[in-house]
Image (cartoon, rainbow, N blue to C red; front, top):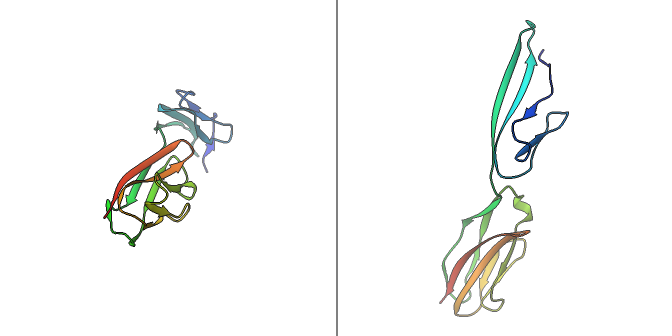
Length: 133
């Protein structure tokens, strides 16, 4: 059995904090080293260091199309990094050009022209230009 000798600590609490249960919580972007001392069966104390890289959250559109024909449907998809995928909401810049399901990402091309399909969570957005022919 391994037991904790000391509570884990962070080298940079502006980046990551560690609570008394050992739970690490991101506080800001940057790098922090989490150090934990453990006591092995032998009584020997071992220090384990884990490097944590905290980046700004972002959205990556993983399934898209840049061209649609009037009447076509297409389901856009996105992956959230630092945000929950299920919280991603879809919209378009011109509601009459491409209509898209807020939670499904399923789009229908309604009229010719250029539009932007937008994936958003809070103030984090990613958009892709779509031309309807």
